[in-house]
Length: 165
Image (cartoon, rainbow, N blue to C red):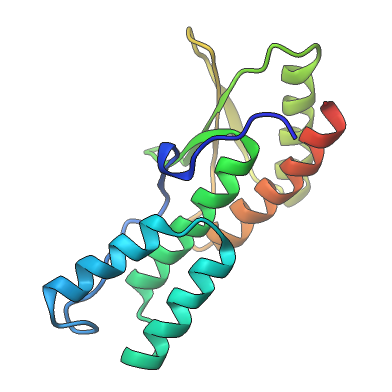
């Protein structure tokens, strides 16, 4: 399927508010164990079990923790398709992908970016690079559902990668 990387090698930061609230889990050692469990999750099923356990033990998950969980879900998806990072920056959400040495990879990627984000009416721009990375920035508004848009993009990117191999 093309490039894959370890989830722990992928940097994800798309939410400003992302933490385990003290009001939700009072004990610091338990909050730390939640972070550790999330970081060691290697599949969606692992994350689902963690979420189930949290709800069972502490009740509904608050927004900031939900954001942490979504970032770990994105990390798993990004690792599967070879995306190095997805970071919230001043202009929007920046994606960084290791350049492939395959004929037409860059063109295929740019065509896919154009088709996907263009269909949604979302502006983006390509980020110039001097290293072996391809970067682009998507201008999502604060009101848009970042997780759904990004996870859908990554899921469809997986299909483009398969076609391009």
